[in-house]
Amino acid sequence: MPFTPGGTYRWMSPELLDPEAFGIPQSEESSRPTTQSDCYAFGMVIYEILCGHHPFVDVPTDILVMNAITNGVRPEKPEGAARLGFTDELWGILERCWLEDRSARPSVEEILPYLNDAWYMMTMTPDSSASHASTPSQSQGPVQVDYMCERCGTRPKCRKGDIVYPYCGLRCAKSGPPPVRPPMNPPNPPLFRTAHPAQPQTTFTATICHTPDCVFPAFTNANGTLSKYCSITHKRLGEYGCIWCRAAPSNSVFILCQPCHDNAMLMAPMIINMPEDHTAYKSVAKQFQQSWKHNTPCPQVRAVYKIISTEQSLKQYQQYLDAVEARGKFKAMNKQPGNENRRWHGARRKCYIGDSGVTTFCNDPGCSLCCILQRSYDLDFYVKGGMFGTGIYTSSASSKSNDYSKNVDIHSEWKAMLLNKVVVGYGKKLTQRNQALIAPPPGYDSVLGEVSPGHLNYDRLVVYNNDAVRPSYLVMYQPL
Image (cartoon, rainbow, N blue to C red; front, side):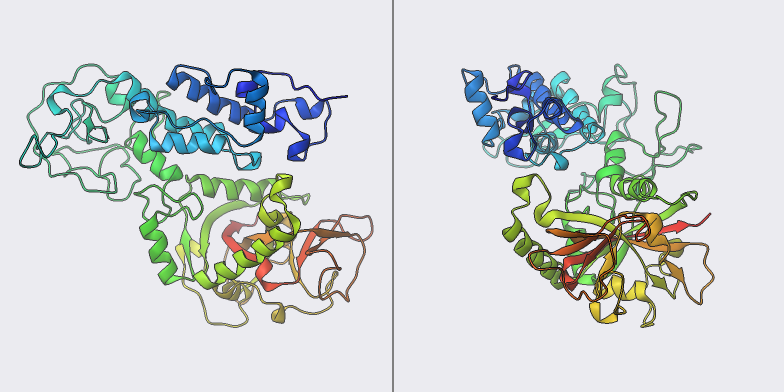
């Protein structure tokens, strides 16, 4: 019986229109919306509201629309996108909403901050006193304008290309006409980062903005609670920006801005202490808590560090991943390339790295943690004859990896655990010991030790190639 999706086709995600093509068996369940398909539809709704017409307006029939969507066609960025409210950041998040890989689509919480700028662009008119910058034919020199917000006078006016708006953002735009204030003559704004002029002669008693080098007080939220930041812009930088400088937008892959990424590659291997309010920190801490499977209280995460491996190490990992993907075609099954997964690993620690911001590696060859952080995993250092032979063992259960996290000859209240990227490929499921293994069974890339009564209480993932795994995050936690 042919499958007939129910819904409004122009807003429906490709996996709802043709589940089998995206590796989902046809059933009543497969036709039901999911959080990921809702994200896709939400992106289409945003597009419709800003453009003023429904998606695929030039495609006349629903059948043609379905064919276009399942073949990867998506709306194009319209002319005059900035005027309509499509900032570069918002368009980028919409393109993520429409990805075929539904697991890579953003959450609603990630999308909402980008709508503030869109609302501002649609509802504000250009400042008549600071209008479009003159072209070279109109002026022999640069145009000098007062770039401070006309409402608060402490933050730069919002700029989109050549257009200058009278206010710094949504809060000031909604606050009514500007108060009378003496003129200010601040220096020209610096490029590539949000910054403020010198602090006014005012004594602040409120909490200062957490953005580095910012001297302005944090604003009060609508519910009366105090924010950590002085503005929406700085809040977004804190949650989504570069984890190192915390003053510039980040690359989504490395969560570093390009200059910081380049510097980190020169200094690698290294670890970077991540801010607690960053989305990547929250994601790692949440996985730690949700994957604690033992019948004991879950410890509190105290710190998360991003591990920066050397360029050569990352290249070798990527080459291995590409080779596994070429054999297995996992992207076509709506999985990550190479069937990559995040798994936990506990290790011996003989130094205080990770404690209270300590980021210096020790040189003790017995400190397994520092060895892994600097050079990744090495099968030569693993004892032969494990449950599934000589391999690199990880687990989806943080509580299981906790059994192998040891502090040796040090007195620390914290323990360390590694969250790794692992190329699973095709995993051979085993429920009983096979200690003779030195490689996965023929036709497989890894071994999946499954829970079985009397043999295995918690899962294992074992790889037998050094380049199949790389440490990604160092998590410091305090046992209860």
